[in-house]
Length: 405
Figure 1 (cartoon, rainbow, N blue to C red):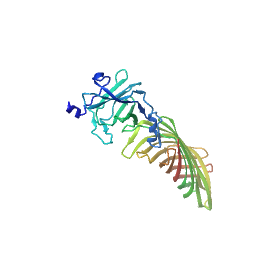
Figure 2: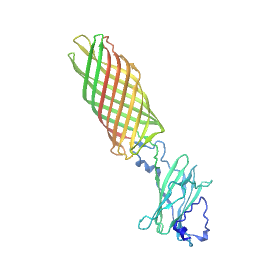
Figure 3: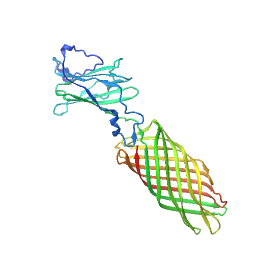
Figure 4: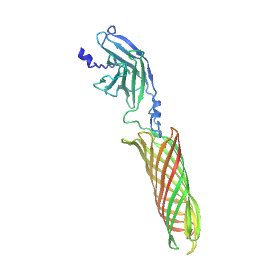
């Protein structure tokens, strides 16, 4: 018997205890204070939110915890009872039951032989019993409610030999939960560098045009449409300067507006030691108003603008650092065909974006973003002389301030 007590004699029961009532003495008991799962919202990445209702409360009724003493033994017994009100089972999610004495000194932990054994009866009721040493004053019990979803708690039992208190702390499991990206709005300002090469006709010449300006203004908005669908919109404007082009100098503003739907799936994730990645694909459209140069004669030229709409398809990835200090957004799009509103425009284009953001608080953020466009194709304006083969490369670098919703 002494060796059995020394080994802590762990006993787990689903509905009944073997000892008769007259052979035991209740020393202490307490109701359970349950900390809600919703309190964990502040512990996830600031750029993520619980759109899938992962942090809902499980339907369970916890009865009081009891500490029982058996006169024939030198150990105490902890009883945990309650009733599950939904289709869940209950089990230990760790084999280690941590113990501390009244001086907060760690005692030898209880090691459970099994952790996957369900402990619930068909009625939904459960009764769990653990033998613990007499000098244990603090007990940490890991219990999990599991089924289609899982809910982990770490029960802190304090003051075993005094005024006992029991608190159930919710725990996100080690592999993590899959949360959605939060709605976000950005405003930004920065610079643009652009190069535009045009091989013109019928007056044959090659134009190499460059522009470098510091007046880019941008706006971006993203919100969850459905659990796995996100609407993304963005717009920016900047100036393209034409300097000493056939005795013509001037500038024209370009405008770009994108709208698209981002598709993902709950299981489309990847993680490593540094970050978690959520990825998916994009489909939408892009409106652009862009200035062009044209050669009117051997010694004169002009500036015009063209407006067009293009379809966009592509993919994206969002990286959430585990330390919750960084968020990275990267996307790449293909523009396979164009529809000209006041000119013809044919070819293929590519656009992309890379951004790094740091949350200032739960509702504010700052970021550095770079994005750009490359196009190879043909342009034909309303004027017969406004025709050229075009190559465009455009890049932006800007600072952004964001609001998280």
